[in-house]
Image (cartoon, rainbow, N blue to C red; front, side, top):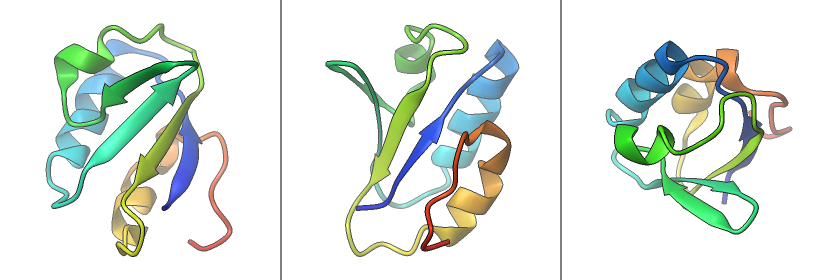
Length: 82
């Protein structure tokens, strides 16, 4: 499983992230505390407080290097494998 921490600072960040996420053929999950959000759902992500760190995860064994490069502006830290 690929994991990275992301933060959205504006509604435009969420809109752009969801646009990028929807181009991926695999599931994208975001977690904040006990809450789990679908990374491809703009309505789901509008429930997240702006500025809150979220743990993003994708399926294990999936090459998501292009996706991680595309979402770099929202990442707090990048995994060592990228």
